[in-house]
Length: 480
Ligand code: ADP
Ligand code: GLC
Image 1 (spheres, rainbow, N blue to C red):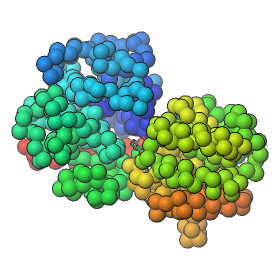
Image 2: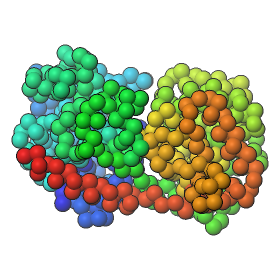
Image 3: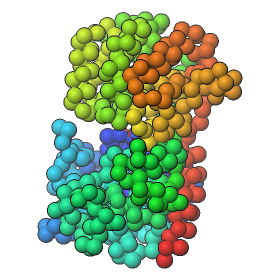
Image 4: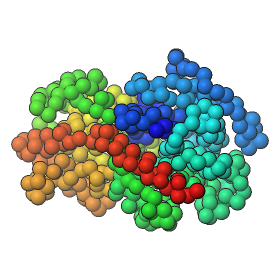
């Protein structure tokens, strides 16, 4: 089976968040299961051209302007083939989607061209048996395939309903879709163009990145205005929790951390903690619980709770390290907290992958109080690093973290601390429970080991995607 995996970012070539981790690892896991998965993504600035083979030229007239580009074939370090769409005026830029907190004005053109080039690649370059699209950037591909009466089955995966690709109605002609498509049953959304809707309507099957999020997005609370449509497609909507690439995220092999460690010997973790405290200029003290978080600083991740609960958390004696970039208001709030509480708080504003690994390894507790979380990867990384997660029960966090209760401890399932109500009080109380447990060395060691032994490898998820590809092909056969 041949699968074209169309996606806007993939590690290690280009990354802003978890989507890149997924696109960098899931195709390789599927390939290990005998599927010839190839990724297609834009050729952004900084991606090496060494060893790339020319495949074809791409040309489109978009909104009255001719756009030209070329498709090159290369490979990921793990061997997965990748088709890189090269069109310097569109993709050779400092950012992937924007700069300085602002999206690029021509994002619609950029991803229309991407999807149109994918159609041509499927026709003239490499013919897949299935197209697997991800988030709004590739959501027009299923619509174009239907327009061209293609028989190729399409699976559309929602990684985050918060980014739907909405544009002013005047930009609709840029899509090249027939004007009948601009209705509430089509891609119109409260008078605007909604690109994600094209994927949700035109794909044979839909999925998202956890079972709980698949249910949540069919409710008004989490559906971001698309819950009606998602309920209508409920029978075709599936949830598959993301996995972890343990060749990159495992403290026994991680080259980014100062000492390696494993379930049986956690000594290296203390080295990682001391080194992190030292390098960040925090008091080096093994007894002080070190709480870390690494995330886009956006409201999705619950940073308003972290900001309002920070004083209460440090008053319990913890150190707190935050690594992230995003909303300038959160950046400023955490910088101010660092100035106010310099012995206990570090706000590291930036995107730094090595530091992300060092925080996973050096922290005792990992904070993820998300308002919503389709899957989440950092809580899974934390488990493997023996860094006990504190999470809110939503989406993929609900599907991976089991609260420390007497019953869950007895069953040997407890691996973290979970709260339900989205409030500062609930967060602070739950961090308080974690800090109390941290002081009980036996209990803490137990929790760490339950987490470290868990298997969230991509191979498990890949099996589920294989089944989903079969379902997608089946649905496609019935649609004809
Ligand atoms: P999301 O995709 O919503 O951002 P995930 O938990 O799925 O959330 O994945 C986030 C990924 O991005 C992780 O690999 C995380 O380490 C990484 N990441 C987020 N912010 C930063 C940052 N400031 N520096 C380095 N890595 C980051
Ligand atoms: C999204 C979600 C995150 C998920 C990631 C990869 O950005 O916010 O929960 O892990 O996509 O699927």
